Figure 1 (cartoon, rainbow, N blue to C red):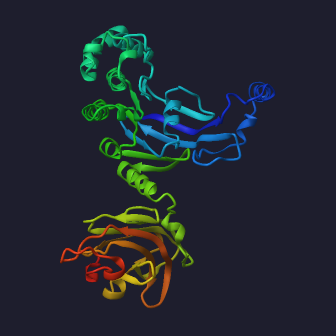
Figure 2: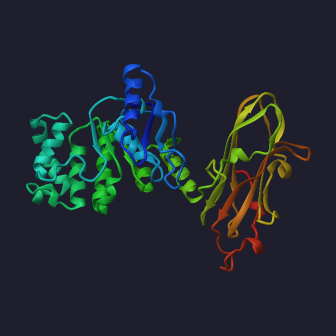
Figure 3: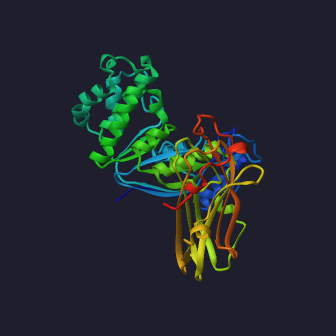
Length: 424
């Protein structure tokens, strides 16, 4: 059962001004949209919401063409850099603001915790705010009273329950706010970065409660956080937002890895975009190297394998297809080569239709620290290339020490143990 559906959702803001800025523009917008039932004329201009650079338009798209569904009981982590549109997306779902275009469908009551003290009246006591928030979520007084002891115990604010909220610290406020949102039995729980305000003990307890809410009670959770460990532990699905668009929608671990690597290498392109040539009738649709589609990644100390995955479609058979992976130093000198078809006559035929090639390359025990350029090719040994993606990726090895305990340096030592590059 679908709990939430975002259909062609976009949100536009005008920088610096409320409304269109002039009375004539406001009247024109009213005439076009309300009387003539046409599109808003002021939505036809707008730039990507890049907060770091000044653009040429006063209109920006905080979100643009967002489409995805969330099933009941799913725990979805929404990640991205500041200004990517995460909080805007949750505010639209919580009806704090309305989308410029598109439709949001939600099944059930929504409890939102978007900012510290969301929905709290500072002059009212903690007890009074519990009842007010419960009423806003559609709870009866008897239902709130039944849950009151659990809420107070979870928040740890019993001593201040009858004190006005304006005297609470930010940590106490978020404790009470989360306790209310999590215990008043909403079908959908929306949590923004507010948990970062709480201490470590409360964060652990809050994450445990969200797990109980989703797994034990089958409720839906949307969780925004910059704590990548919490996203991995709590969520099964991850959505990466980048400049108001969905950059990735898949497994939580894959989403976190992609976001982390992109954050470390902001100018990284996709490996597949660096393919130089491919044979007629051979189309490559997906390439992953070291677990990422991006052209830059890092190998940590102790990493034992590098995975290579190539997917695509073929209109004909390509016999003796051998995957070659070459690591070169910054001067272009080959430091290590993986080519099992050439050395072991261990190649295979790409059959017509969809195909998937996977290789697990075993790294040598000692790898020199440094940056390497990577070639990935598919060829028929000693004849011709089916696909050439030379210099398609850059990889940084954090490096280790040799058997004498001395740090390895790329220019001097290269890769040791080339014989370790074999197929598992």
